[in-house]
Length: 491
Ligand SMILES: [Ca+2]
Ligand SMILES: [Ca+2]
Ligand SMILES: [Ca+2]
Image 1 (spheres, protein in one colour):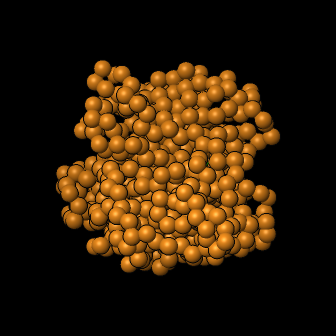
Image 2 (cartoon, helix red, strand yellow):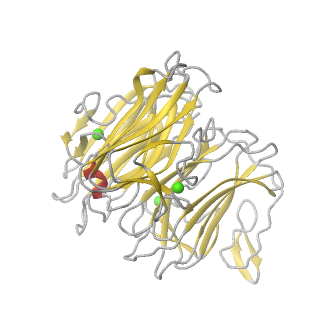
Image 3 (cartoon, protein in one colour):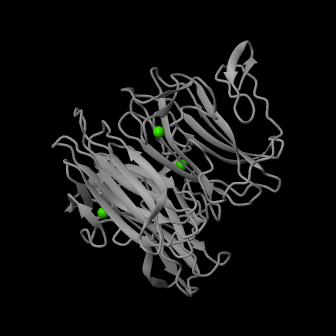
């Protein structure tokens, strides 16, 4: 329905006044939030495929020029801009896991700052507390790469019924637009378990060799850590307040060049002794970071359940400086999760073992997203899938995360890749699609992009899932690679 607002006709959203006109007042309706399945992505239209429906905005628009996911993305700016909406989240005390992808679509050197904020609102939609405020400094977002952000809120206070999600963009050196796509807000079991996770307090809470605080254009906030020599950085997180055998989610952001990085979650017993094997053991090649052209690359992974006797988890970064180069780290996240990564051979380090493929090969490479090998899908098109059992899946949602890159700069026909999670019954028959991500061709040469999605709740008779990547035909010179695929549960 439409209504008049300051003389302009605006579309009336299910709640309030979905006005795009600056100065249009926003009237919160005292609506009762709908009860939703607790594990879903709370954001309908998370990829702006129905434009700015249900969002309120100032100086924002939609384009289809260079979407990260699907066919459209939101554009903020040029100049100051904002985009926000209120989302019913029920009365649970679960913190929220938050993700989005940003990109500057034009050649520019200064894209302006961006703040992403989550406010907790009561049933009358009056703000009662801040859930998080993530600040991306001016100059961090540029046209060289898309950056995927991960963050976790604190616990919503008693009385919270809604979350207000708002993006606000400052002015940079014009033109300074910022594209935004694939926004996720989903329940998590815990807030971030790490202290000083974004290094805004320097090295407080961390043990360090060679890593020092640094304040030049961080991934988020006003600080990061930096090493120019072989270094180690770690923090121990006690597990005493978590259930036994819990898995954990790890996320972090890294940039730099020619510096190999090892990232592990180690399990420690009461005496501080290490329990084998590590919960997470990742290798990121320096060549991978060089190819990102100083843009931060993010990672998300799930540990195996903590072993019996584990008293703490140690998150540890070890870098090996090959030449006189730099490495930067920011925003490390450790959350209680609800499952390990359910996929086998998720990073293609053992070839295509456990995967089914057509016109796809596991290829050794010096600049994999993770490890030393990737899955490469032929230019003529091809596919790749793995089926996994889902114990007690009914009503539960799953997070899918993977690295993707293509080299389509200057090429018109690069093909599209569809990433899907399909539900299967006990006879292996398809029950429907739980998640579909459309990964369009990009104009970025050989940079890794990080895709994440949350499935719908699994139907009652789902006992397995198929994780599937299918690529359509592209020009012969265009490669498409997939690496380090994660499927698991946040809650
Ligand atoms: Ca989109
Ligand atoms: Ca920071
Ligand atoms: Ca790999």
